[in-house]
Length: 271
Ligand code: KIV
Image 1 (spheres, rainbow, N blue to C red):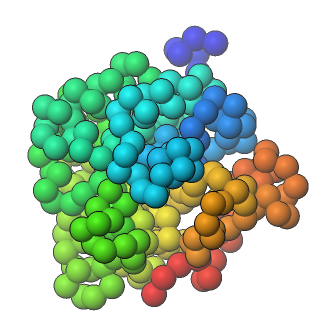
Image 2 (spheres, rainbow, N blue to C red):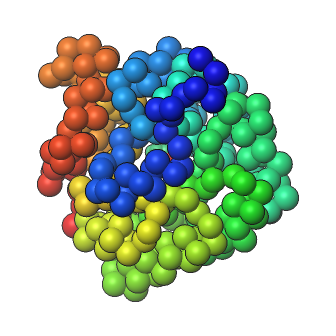
């Protein structure tokens, strides 16, 4: 099938339409072609090649050791498994310290791995980088809340934006990043009410992980929904394979639960 005949291919435009229509956006991570194919066949809207591959594939403690070459290798593999889902690729740690560096590295993902969007962590300080990428036709998902690439600076994997001033600052940063040209926002480990407020305020889709059922969509790490974990499964995730019985059934059960609003439940979010 040629790229031009893929009429059901998810695009940035269709994601924006889903937000306007109140249709939930379903996202999962993948790191290889075979799992990507299962996700694609199961109707997942966005497949993220996350730098979580540092932990779940490479066995590292954090995402910090992941390189642009690692991301390229896995993104090229994932791209081969996709026909329908939108491919989003994480910019790894220190690969976007200036607009020039971000452009060069995001360019590798767009040109060599057919990425349709890149994701980068950070708030107001990333506005110029988001704007530069957007001006060069590179869709950006801005990642706010818990930013795992800053784990040593913030002193651990903790819920962010709990006090009023931090909540106000996050809302302002989200608006600034939208104005800078971000096409999507991801909120990780943010209190339910704040994530709901940001989702209602922004015009671009807001995807949650440990955030709120009121977000425009949800994302989880694939291995967590398949019950494969080297530690404990995070509070905000759910082992879907235990009930579903097969990988494809688990992915479909997750997608159904997001679309019908039963995931995340109260037990998966933070106050
Ligand atoms: O790297 C990743 O998998 C992510 C998700 C946790 C959203 O950024």
